Image (cartoon, rainbow, N blue to C red):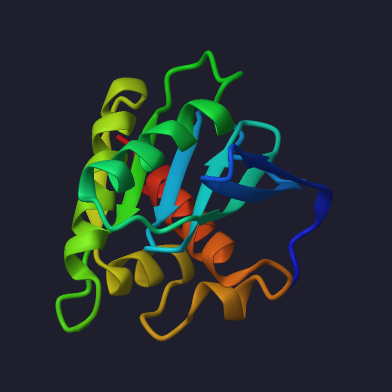
Amino acid sequence: MEIEITDKSSDEYEGEFSFTKYTLKDGSGDGHFIGIDPGTANFGVALIHPNFSEVWQISIIRKRDPLQRMKIIQAIFPRIFCYEKTMISKSVIEAAAYNAPYRQVELAEQRAAIALYLDKISKEVEFKQAQAIRKIAFGKYDMLAHEFWTNLPSDCAAALSCAVVAQKTYR
C-alpha cells in the first residue's frame, strides 16, 4: 500500500547528520504521537499530528566515542521538532532485538539518549519489541512496515509503525 506523500525536503547539520523529511497526508485525528526506529548509521523518526504526519530518514556520521554519539542523537531532535509546542501524547521506541549480534551497545546508547530526550516532551515513552509493534500496527507478526508502506524508506516505515502503535495504545 502506498501512503500519500505531500512534501519531501532534505537538510544537513554541520556535517554530523542529514535527513530527508516526508510529509504525509493522514494524521491521527487527535493527539501527537512519535515513533522511533533506531539505527547506528540510519534511523527513522515519525510524528503523527492530528491532521497530517511527518517522517524523517536520518543519517548520522558514526563516531567512535560513545558520548559523541549520544550528543549527536540529542542534537537531532530539537532540530526536527523545533516548532513543536504541543506536549507529545505518547512515544514508542523499537526495543532491542536480543538475537542481533552487531552494534547492540551502540544501539542501547542511542535508545537511552532518545528516551531521555523524549521523556522531556512526551507524556509517555515506551519501548516495544518489533513483533509486538507489527502485531498492533498491522494485525499480524509477519507484516513488515516497508512491505505495508511501499513508497517510504524502510526506516521511515518502521518509525511510522511505532507511531501508529503509540496512537493505538495511548490511554
